[in-house]
Amino acid sequence: MKIVCFGPGPQFKGGIANYNTSLAKALDHQGHQVTIVSWTQQYPAIIPRDFIDRASRSDQLEGTQIRVRYITNYNNPATWRETIRAISELTPDAVIFQWAIAIQGLPLGRIAAGLKKRSIRVVFDLHFVIQKEHSSLDKFFSKYALRHADMFVTHALKTFDELKVIFPDKSFALINDQQSLDGTTPVLNLYHPVYDMFVKKSDFDIEAFKILHGLKKHVFIFFGFIRKYKGLHDAISAFKLLSEQREDVSLLICGESFWKTIDQKKLSSKIKSGLFGIAKKVFLRRKDDEQDYDPLQLISTLHVKDVKVFNEFIPNEDVHQYFQASDAVLLFYEYATPSGVESIAYNFQMPLLATAVGHFPETVRSGFNGYLARPGDIADMARIMDLSIRQPIDREHVAETTRHMSWDNYATRIIESLSLLSDC
Image (cartoon, rainbow, N blue to C red; front, side, top):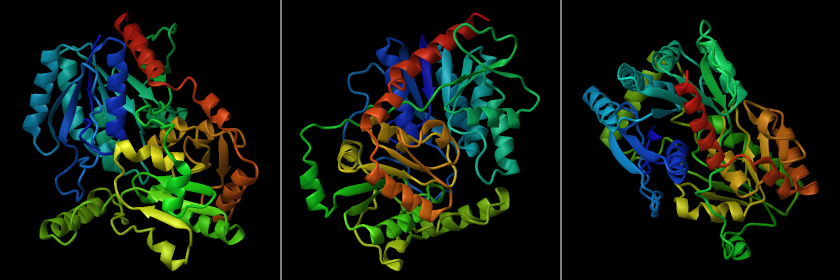
């Protein structure tokens, strides 16, 4: 097939860019003709953040036939029309949109509608449907874009249920290879594939790395963008309790503060931050704009010892060393959709210590591939951290959990479903 993967290209930071690139590579490896059509600017210009990956050095598309076109600027509707024309000229069998935030619904809705008029199949790969603190504007943008889908892909049944809430009058059906669609909108419920772009290196000297950075015997890692919903404040507080009981533990924090990627002293940054804060309060009705969230201050406030912080974006080539030096990943989220960090942890057969929110009860079998804590319960988080040391998870169990979660299987299921859709 000829497939367009629409989403952030490999020049962007973050899980969605990695996801879109990995999906394109899996389809390419199966012999399909793949083009990534990407944003040049993903969000309104007032958002005070740098989204470009300026640290990674490797070419993620090396060895593939994938073409990349950076076209779509959120702030320039003319590029939305250009995107429709460019995709139409490729005559694809389907366009797979990465859907990760409602605010993108305006341009994506216009683009999807334009493609549908040209009889091009539209698939939305859903990383979420209902956001926390869901506003009426979020709902409008979501419905505006997602109503154009011929098919959806979800990574958790929770997301499928949210889709039915957003569109109560539509009929959806979870599909398999043999199922008749019968006029319903098909939903292919899969999983978040395991990132194979981050590779364990057998010659990496773990002990030398731990000595260099002062890490003790048992290392817990928080990885990824520092955002409030990911609960780093709870992870630090829980580690504080644990470190008071044990002297052989360390906490490794690796990630960029989400809203501190540009020079905050510049006048342009101050103007953007002010406008963005007002917009969130007025349009999204959010009193907490998260820009002042700084959980790292807790380390000094609580006098937490044995914490090593890399408060920066980690280049793709260096990700392996932090996971190889760690024993368990902390996912003490306040709410959750399928997580890229969870997928990276699976790639290193890393036990998951998570809160029982969102999809985690679907993916974490307590005592088998990780442990679940009560959300918001710091003492219970500290308890499962200690439990993971006293009753360690067999990493082969983690591997068993993820044997079917490859990108190849994921791409195959999408292609099979598209073929089923074409037959209707």
